[in-house]
Image (cartoon, rainbow, N blue to C red; front, side, top):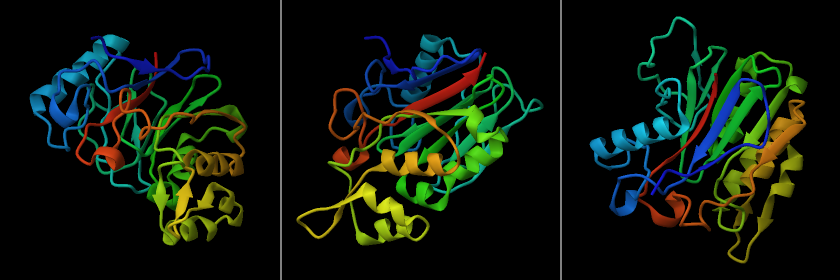
Length: 248
């Protein structure tokens, strides 16, 4: 089976982007099959082969710059002087670049991947937006690091856990309402006295408050579609998928 991907519908000169699905790799068990995460307990050799399969399938110009993601707001910047392939990066949950052929990468298995690109193809970036990073400002940090006027940016929201399956406590809701009372619309009370949380809606609010209007994607639920997506909340131990963006 060949590797499968989702692609943003945007058409930006010189910019390519993709999101890897779970099928088409060599991993087995809970990591079956196209797992890109080295930190989840999978065979390192299988992960290496899966990453290579993605590079070959997408004709990537370089190995992706894999982050050590920590659910924070740190941003890694891929500069022209960086080695190719890039060395392992410090802890960060977003990555941006103006360097052609440098591949920004985010790993997810329920958290929301956000891909960003300048309309003129001069800069790209990616953010790992779980609820903690989203509430703390990882999207704002990534947009700021791109240094592109917000109305010249486009954003794509990849697959994440959908509101029908993402149950959270009141402390999560309060973390968002403390900075944006209007974020209440992204939370629906359930019969257990908790809340169903809409991550894509929260991300759209954050992006909209920054001035971005061209926002697409966000309609896929990782939890609900086990054939195409890994989901940590559904399965516990599982693989990771990759959101990738680069300039040719």
